[in-house]
Amino acid sequence: MNQQHLPAYLKALMKTGQLGCPVSELQVIQTHISYVLVAGQQVYKFKKPVNFGFLDFTTLEQRGYFCRREVELNRRLCPDIYLGVFTVNRDGDDYRLNGTGEVIEYGVKMARLPEELMMGRVIAAGKLEYQHLDAIIARLVPFYAQAAGDEKIKAFGKVEAVGVNVIENFQQTESFVDGPALSRAQFDRIGAFSRTVLADSARFDQRIAAGRIRDCHGDLYSANICLDDRIHIFDCIEFNERFRYADVASDVAFLAMDLDYHGLAPMATYFLEGFARAADDPDLLQHVGFYQCYRAYVRGKIGLFTAADPAVEKTVAEACTEQAKRYFELADRYAQTGI
Image (cartoon, rainbow, N blue to C red; front, side, top):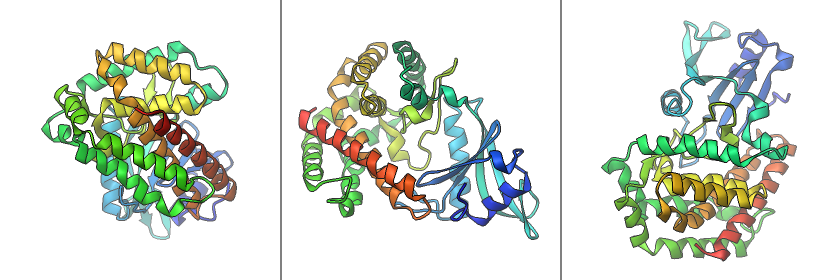
């Protein structure tokens, strides 16, 4: 376990046994925005003090607020998994969970889900079945039906709002063009396709009129799904409403894109068609191609950001770069095949 780039409070907590797990059994997972400590049957998640423009965790107050929002929002689909928010306190020279001294950090405590049933692992083992997709659909349809969709949320379905999310990806990745993951030709084709779709404002207005803009999950792909008896869909976007307030088509397109990424195109089609039927939303199928392209590009961008983080180990950075390359290839394929 490389602790070189971990903050002092994490190193201290790991050594003192406060996490209820021997140091030798602790697992640290890093993303571009989080530190995640897996400790026995508990998971402790901390937000990195970073600012990527689309999220800002740079102050303690912001990290505390978004920890609380993470628990609140994720309890919509995982009420039994998100256990609550805790503090890290400095007590003299020591750091304590929920201590009495100065609060120096906040975190989210979760119950650990069975790793062997994580959708990504099930896919990797070649054991994903169509009945799993049926179960996911059965979980999602009532979730979206009950999700908020007021006037404020509907406004995020307008072409101008969607365009902000899409176009900023190109702005944030331009410095990576002609690198190992993203070519200039791909960058130009994907950008041109996206702008062509965004030029047709009527298609977005129709989705608003149909009531399809909801307070969604925002990060709906296999890494955030556990295929246990209940189907747990966790780790929704809490840090930026404009990524969560969206067309339902954008949310489900993410999972369909993810299935494509893993070489499961027939399952992607099955999922989209099955969801459209169950949600009584046949028009959805006319919009998912655009959102699949968008979602693939976002995943590529995140891979680039993670690989560029100096706190990430070299082997992880190399893997993230390779993954980003594959995501950009997929986004380019969607751009070339059209809507």
